[in-house]
Length: 552
Image 1 (cartoon, rainbow, N blue to C red):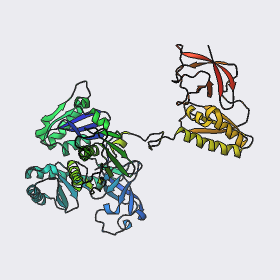
Image 2 (cartoon, rainbow, N blue to C red):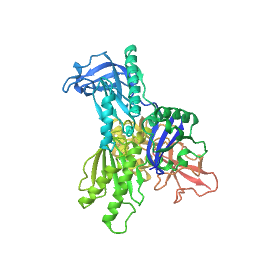
Image 3 (tube, one colour):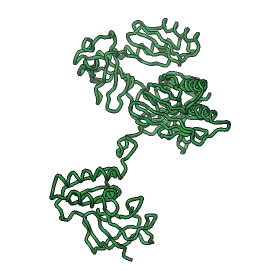
Image 4 (cartoon, rainbow, N blue to C red):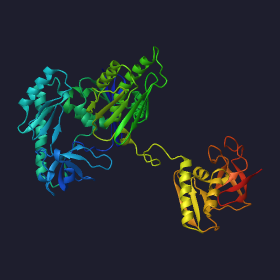
């Protein structure tokens, strides 16, 4: 298996793509320095017994949250108030960065990661990564860790330590011990709140955690970043520094390596599968739902073969999309129904194998008879979708906009209420032309019926700058002119490319802020003339809309 790291730098953004056998395998994007792993000297701002937690001022925009279970030395059942006092100063490390409106989650159990080991302050833990497949190798590393473990500190051996010599491991642990001593010294000599230790940036973490002997190249399109990365890599794996290359061609680096489309697809809702099926991925607040569809794929042997092949293709792509999108929390996958138990077991085993190389910790629940799989996955920050996008301002992230008919019906309810509450006053309704047409009804029938039923008077104006779902209401004196009122007999130019409303059955143009019913409306909604505009003569001006004839 060939691994290549492709790095695109476009300040302030850095994108790191891991490519395996020519295909995008993993993706990381960093725009701002992340807080995860940073160590702060904080101050307890307030203690919340009902949450068994305290809010810690760490000098950032929002206070951090410290749960009782994250306080070093805490015993099960001990209340937070017995462990911390308001205004108390203490060292904390960010265990989970801020997300949305929530502040960071912190712990007093400090740890520092190195190339081969993680040093856990004030602990007696000795652990070895379960991703090292050989029991013999894990045993060797455990014995080395127990022998090299500093007094009063724990050691966790990382996957990258597989095959490492005692000398390399000892040097890594010694470096971490020195860093931890420096953190403790700075913590004693500084005033809270302040940053004590900042973890490496994205490129530094890649150099430390992810570059191994199986990486054939690291290609970077920024010379300064390439030189910095090469220097960082020499500190961890000097023999690999020769694999760092500069990319200076005009063609964007992600396009050169054929992964630009895959990166773009990682934020799309629909993801195609090789044989014609597809995935539909919906991220919600509490969970992510992934639906598998056969699409145009029909197979050659029968329905069962089609289902199994589609589900197997989906397994590989789902594992890939989970990595690329950095999905977290509860993930529910709806595979296509399989009748035989052995087929469900086959899909589940394939899914577990596909997730084996995922850096995020995940746990799969058994597959149901209907093909439903629940899994949980831990991530370090926001998903890719939320990192790169803001919620839609029109639908507030719902994914749907109200139908024009629904908006118009609700607007008539509001207008009815205002007309009945204020007898003798008229109601001016301002709306997008499409919404205004729905409000009026054909030839104004709905608005006229509303006037008859309430005994009131309506004025309607169309504003193309308004959102279709937004309607404005204003109480006005009946029969008094309103701004932009048209005058009977006046001649007004009308651009031939101006939109006509409603879209399904064009009837009106907008002149000033009035809907104007035109006498000539082509079937395709486009005025048939070679001139840039036509001349309209206003023949009637009503409270709801006006009428005009085309001047030949």
